[in-house]
Image 1 (cartoon, helix red, strand yellow):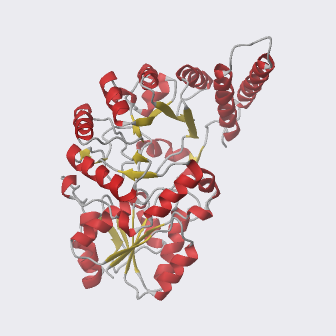
Image 2 (image 1 turned 135 degrees about the vertical axis):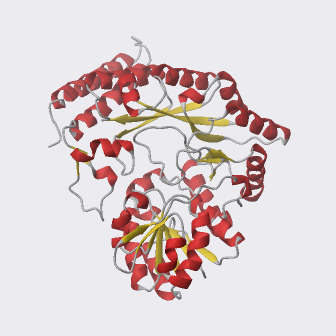
Length: 466
């Protein structure tokens, strides 16, 4: 075996994920597998999703040591570091990649990684595996897109790796390397329908200041519509999913591509429910019509805030009015809408929170998800707040989500913002009072809940992170 690939997501060890129970295969790893196998490398996968860390550790201890590649993101950091430690003790050479390690090169090298892969991994690993085998670490300096420690202990970061220009030339992800049936079974057991993910493109060319572009950069490289339909057709034949998750950063980024894709799906008589992510400024009546024709049942939109001032500070490149129009268009075509919202961005004040509450109340999306802004290292937002960013957690056991921004409002303040938002949306959805029913009492209760949340919000306004 030339390479064993794994990741740090253990479904059954994560209470939050156990509540959600919507696992998807590690597509990035499976793309690496198919590429490297096509080049003649012996590559295996240990999919941790349904396994335990003990299962993985036993394998690392029992197999003849080779090269272990681990995918890492900010949520799996602690697990990945433990995997690296156990692998090094068992004699493995260790490589780590994904969206986080490039921002923490010194830390990952100190924690047991021999090499950090920066950016896309296919071509880099194709060159790295022989280099690790033939001349570590001297030969590594000829491999682009990596970082490692030289023999004198200094860190060497090689020139950036070019990005793959022709995605159609890449093989499909090696889904046969994992238990696809178990993923579908889990979805069907908990949600009544089995879902499979796929990618039609790589990268996002937009400039949102809090978003990481560590792997695919600010690019948009897309497969041809025909190639994507080929994969969809194969997925439906091979696995018989009930729906798809199109995992692109912005699925509707190019209307012409979408229209060609829809035409080919129509020509082949293929239609399957799916959900995807878009931007409000990339949704027009023809685009939404095409989504509806294709079977899109839910579209997620990055609304982030109902305050234009905050959106401009984020460099979102969209307006509040565009978000409302996109939601309205989707509803009119029978497509559910989901909004992503973010509290606590730089400069947000009470008026901006009230604007967001009013915005969501007027949009009335089917679902909305909120988070408090956190700085991801390597992003412009992180650079902006870094002098005031502190954490009480050890880097090895925490994540970038643990950063607190000195001078920002307290966590309690944003909890009240959340309560206010949800109460006001519930109130707006409540039916008009009917004297013959209990509805008036329900409305009164919701009004009290909203008023209490607003009072708490104003009370906590003066509470600032120390």
